Length: 360
Ligand code: CUA
Image (cartoon, rainbow, N blue to C red; front, side, top):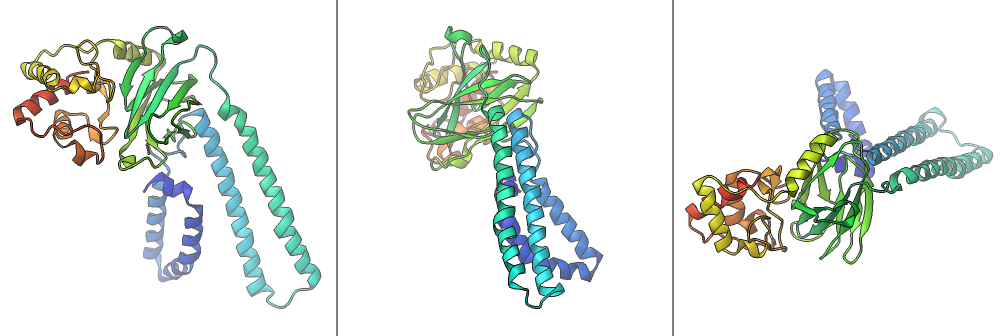
């Protein structure tokens, strides 16, 4: 069950409760078995609140503030719901007779104006108090990462400190040092995408012609999942990315490795794959640093074998998946720009897959 169902649809939950409550009550009367069933369903429902893409299982400073706000709002909603149900019960069962006009006026003014004003003002004040922390810019000299939303993958560039030198480019994977504020520069060359790592913080749109900035600070290590949160075309749902939060020294080692050129293939199959990669024109769209391949249309493949997944989070990183991607691209990701190379002989496809998987 997805977390978005869990948090984004309070209306659905309220309707579900109102609709099903009489049934639940009847089941409860029917005995223990039904009761256990309800507990099981509740547990399944709550299971959607954890995992690598849950805003309710925060691993970043922004996400912690947002989760706090969510729980306060949920608690408030429960209190209000109980009060409304209690009043309804009181009016129907406890004192069903007509009330005086004075009592009715008090109820309307109190319940209709004063209580909502107090509750909403309190929530507004609490929400505004969170803003400075959520929007605080990263300090001078902090890590800067430019992320471009493409149809349908993520171009990730680690900008060199001070703006000098060469950026390190990769795709569909972001690694971050724990406990450091990182500034993201978010762009799009085509349509509006939305950059969201629910476990780390809030989301922000990527708008063509603009550079939006977002600061995130991971508070614990782990592997999380980011996604596009704005419908952007056919394969919008096939556009996710991995976020790996590392200890600072592990992160520095990883970034230094990403900055290196690709390693030369050693096995004969992979060596054949490299020759095929260059001969079939793959380098017109893809860069493999250290080789003549320097295309910039598609993802940089210099260290593609070291990533956690392929195709923007949709395939495992293994030779069979490379083969499937190269031969049946359109099948795996409908609407994708890369043409399928299914016309190549199977042995050539295997060689290409071995070469790419070896680019660690
Ligand atoms: Cu990119 Cu939806």
